[in-house]
Length: 59
Image 1 (cartoon, rainbow, N blue to C red):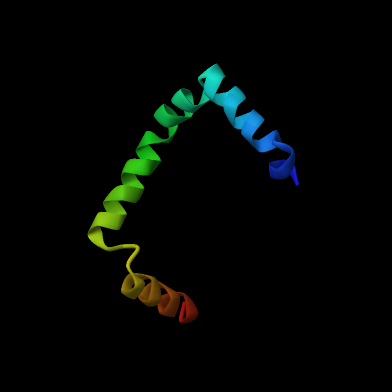
Image 2: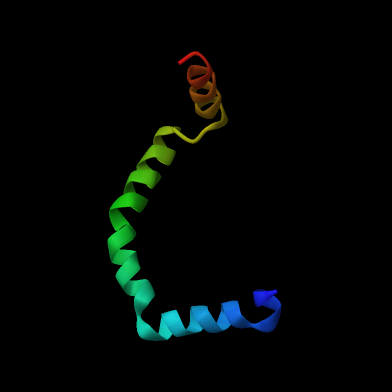
């Protein structure tokens, strides 16, 4: 409903204009780098997800 009324777009525009996204980009950089590295190693592949699921079952 908020999307239909334009509230979401207005909120995003306000945050963009205030520069909040540039601050959060800096704060989230370490987490994003870690996530990218894991993805490059195959940590998020279907096989790895399945192995983690099975391991969780027998924990």
